[in-house]
Image (cartoon, rainbow, N blue to C red):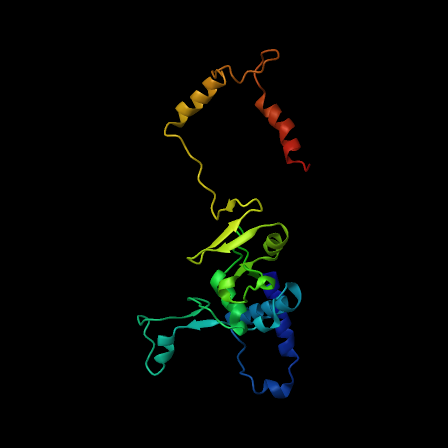
Length: 238
């Protein structure tokens, strides 16, 4: 909100500096607050792209990509029907193999985020699944979107990527073990209590009301004191 306020103030100063001749062509009524907020938000976005964060390739900074199905384009002479087949949407739809000129946008649209298991960072780089030096083509089917960190990990740390016949990606650790998108669930016994008791019996552990009693002088464990001692040690950097 502070940033929006500063942007509105900057736009107001710009308006005050407009020459009197130009002001005569402007509507007498000032813009509504919602309009000023929208202008301020646009100014913030413009400022960030130029100074705050990596804006990406210059050709991508000011583009709005709209995916339109061919049937929708063919029906330009009739009123829009929301129930008609096809779609026209911002960055939504299915992208197939495309040429080099639109490959970057197509890759971002298809993968959405870094494909490395557990990442999901929206900003990424195109990685050749089969390296171009080994004859890998620069085509959508041979590319995967990886963030900078995991792109480096795949190239330098020995991780491997394979595209399966169904189009899904398979990630493997340097030792060849499969790196799953979602870890396998822990197997829970049908009777967890019985399983724990069996483990305790195998270790000859007898758990009763006295099991937590300390074995020095027999006094009860001061839980509060133990937490006060252990918590700062656990929280401190090592």
